[in-house]
Image (cartoon, rainbow, N blue to C red; front, side):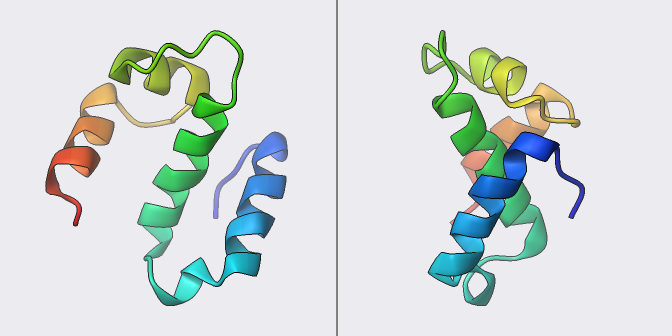
Length: 71
């Protein structure tokens, strides 16, 4: 999984919870970026802030698609 150095702790936590059994790698990648953005100071809850503070490598509409089409 391509990840930033500060994402390793979140990724290890998700692995410890056993999320690999329930979610695919792309979904776990989105979750790590989302949690990273949510715990960042200055996050206001908008999709633009989520994309900005998570350092997500994909375009903002990718996150929008993830929220609208995922179960």
